[in-house]
Length: 69
Image 1 (cartoon, rainbow, N blue to C red):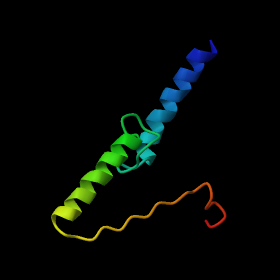
Image 2 (cartoon, rainbow, N blue to C red):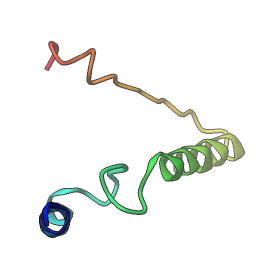
Image 3 (cartoon, helix red, strand yellow):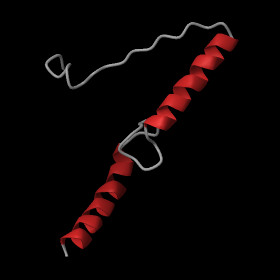
């Protein structure tokens, strides 16, 4: 019984979360995991190399940076 209730709640939360999570957000959504993010990053970096443009990246570890925000 608890599995059925959890599935119903999970589906409702996922449906509501789609309105709040942006299109460019990876993770926490079906079909948008880290593999897709890495693919997009690689595509952008290859394009920058192709057109001789600079590319700046910033990675933030929010777990360790929690006191900063």
